[in-house]
Image 1 (cartoon, rainbow, N blue to C red):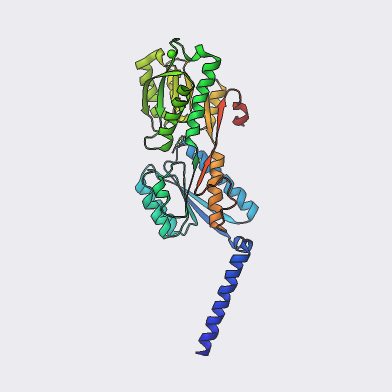
Image 2 (cartoon, rainbow, N blue to C red):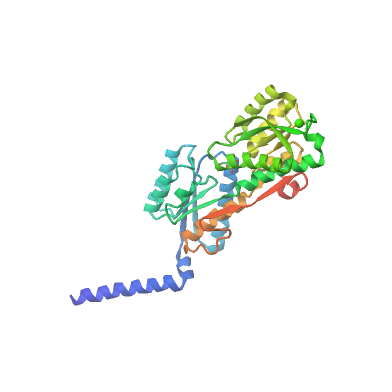
Length: 344
Ligand code: GAL
Ligand code: CA
């Protein structure tokens, strides 16, 4: 019995020491972490904008490894647009004791199952770019979202057209009827950015007293090839009536530009969103009027900073831009005047 008492006292002391170290000296706990593992699953690996975010995360991890002398493993898996795949990938991360899971969810209305998996294994989870509904975000405390202010991207896209209309009206309103005849290439339906960008770009223009007339709109699911084929159809249908192509993202805008080139049309104004390199080049070459940069570096930083803090000392107070569970990054409007600054 005596022995038992001694050993349980000993255990209690060890416990106390650990507890005190944990409470009073965060650095010590933090420095003791030798390896962290972050699992990332994306809805589709060959989405241009998403791969800029994941590449930036890898860069940040490399830098941090050197600075902090900690091994950082980042595994990026492709859900191939299939939610069941994505759930399996999350299971795999949990089974292999990943410290944090980052999810670019296939279907943003179906986050509950994934959140519940994270909750029951106590693995913090960061959604990015495809925003779960608020009700799901409230299912557990350690759920975060990193994305962009979608309304602003639409407003800035609209303001590119307002600027052009103000400075060179006849270059937009080619038929001189005082209205802008346009087509709208939409992203995936159900994606928060699709509905919001579509609404805010047009609303901004109309609120500035410029009349618009929609000739056609349709989804091209964020994709170059689908957009090119939609645009080819619209060129056949509307010909020179089309004055402006609004595109919910750059890759579709580039697809539309390709269709216009093939049809040998060079006086249609095209605007996008994202700020991918190919689009910035198109702005520089006068193929595209402008785009709106969605800050993929700031988004990657937000994701990585939350993940790193959660995996090490758990303290999120230093994470820049975090408001509650959300980080929403700002946009930058790009046209010929400032494109050079951002092409570098
Ligand atoms: C949007 C972006 C698109 C596409 C999509 C994927 O924010 O503008 O290009 O990447 O996210 O969810
Ligand atoms: Ca017109």
